[in-house]
Length: 203
Image 1 (cartoon, rainbow, N blue to C red):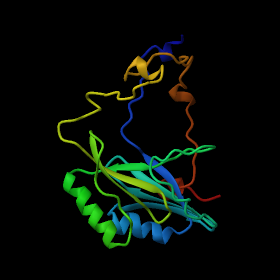
Image 2 (image 1 turned 180 degrees about the horizontal axis):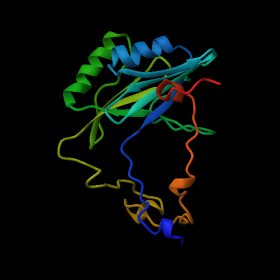
Image 3 (image 1 turned 90 degrees about the vertical axis):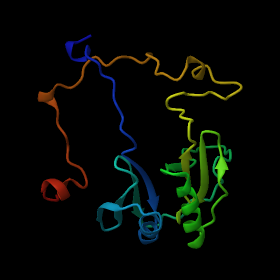
Image 4 (image 1 turned 60 degrees about the vertical axis):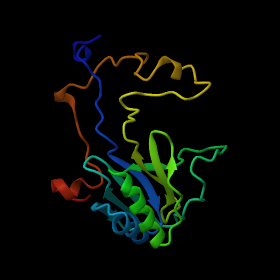
């Protein structure tokens, strides 16, 4: 193994930088995420036929929406209901600071005409369920006091998979990289949005 990769190459994550969703109506999306839920609109990229807007969930986390012509709301599916065939996304859950926040959100969503579930006890979290204007299934969750699955993981599956039986900690199984690109060889290529912050001219 080369000298470059003998040091610890563990990656430390600091949250969800952004979730990228899609919409056919950015104004309705802004109205819901910014005005109803209170998530600040912090960046907007775009050109004819395309938009990409970012909303602040927390100091570390964002949710983003592409707007493309012809995008229609998703086929509404109940959160967690099994499906078959090609599928990649069920729902997204947003954490709230206080239990009271769930009840406030429930009242706000209902007053705005959105269907909202009752508050559900999942043991380690209490949650409510709803849909945004794009029929994206969303959950809002509050951690139950005194229960922290990050500190004390729990496995409740009566028939856990072979990999799950190995425990909660990462297993050292994957092929190690032979080389990490040295500083002198690193190139960061500009992409959409870089012109807003670094003064690049559009091509």
